[in-house]
Amino acid sequence: MAKPKLALYWAASCGGCDVAVLDTNEKILDIANLVDIVFWPIAVDFKYHHVRAMEDKSIDLCLFNGAVRSTEQAEIARLLRDKSKVMVAFGACACFGGIPALANFTNRDGIFQRAYIEAPSNANADGTFPQTLTKVPEGELELPELFDTVLTLAQVVDVEYFVPGCPPPVDLILKVVDLFASGQLPPVGSVIASDKTLCDECKRVKEEKKITRLYRPHEIIPDPEKCLLEQGIICCGPVTRGGCGLRCIEANMPCRGCFGPPPGVVDQGAKLVSAIASIYQGDSEEEIARMVDEVLDPAGTFYRFGLADSMLKRKRL
Ligand code: SF4
Ligand code: SF4
Ligand code: SF4
Image (cartoon, rainbow, N blue to C red; front, side, top):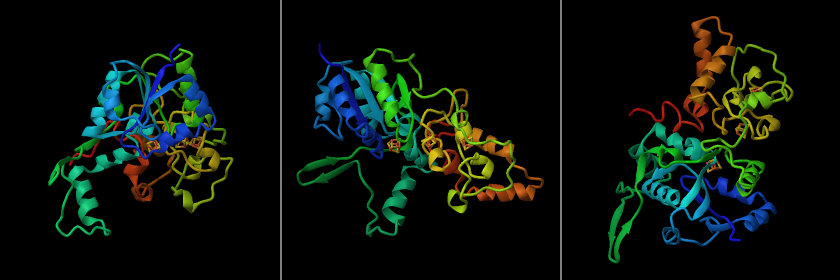
């Protein structure tokens, strides 16, 4: 019997999600035994024209990592959607925009200005910016166009499943493959992770303590037995879906929110602001203002992974 066909793709991605698939170590051989990999730019030499030549819906499962921020990435997302029966937003960037979507606090012009003019390492006296079309003696060179706004995969094409994490942990990847191979995938639209919050899974002692100041992780050695948030370290556990195996918490580091919001939470950042406000003990406006000042990068702290998928989506410029 023919094996199911698997495609993997990276769009606006750091490559970590692909490396996470390779991190399945010897299990990658089990995956290769279970499925026929028909497209995987990081590992297998298939080209876009090979995918275009495939029949529609001939790929059984597509794991798409990375956000969508260029015409090329949007085109390949639509191509893979047409060719795939099941499309999975794989990793925080594909699910919520992830780190690349922090670019939504500026726009294409702002990014080009910084990257090609202002960055101290630039040697660009003519102020040249990338062009989508450049004439050279041999003909025209074409580059994809960068969007003003970074998008999640589901903002571009229909998506059947969401696998969060930056990157998704190996056991979750193997679970997805098992669910797929056994024909036991959950209802369409499911997030394949826990339905609880990370705090529900965390074994640290919670004492319902109020906090009077915030610390950045390098400013304090936290008690490894006690809740980090109650020690004044911003931990996204209350507003983050569980299922990662408490990766950061077990390393005595706060959760940064890479599994996205749990069920019922529309805007992870806004909910985190509210969670912190609820445990802050401040008696005066000055104390509250001081605490707000202690969050040095509020946008990056509250929307590190979820800006593109938040109510805010991007800065109004
Ligand atoms: S989710 Fe994390 S590991 Fe995956 S592509 Fe985005 S930044 Fe990289
Ligand atoms: S806030 Fe963080 S440290 Fe505290 S219980 Fe939740 S996940 Fe654990
Ligand atoms: S603890 Fe939070 S940031 Fe760390 S892996 Fe888990 S969900 Fe992601």
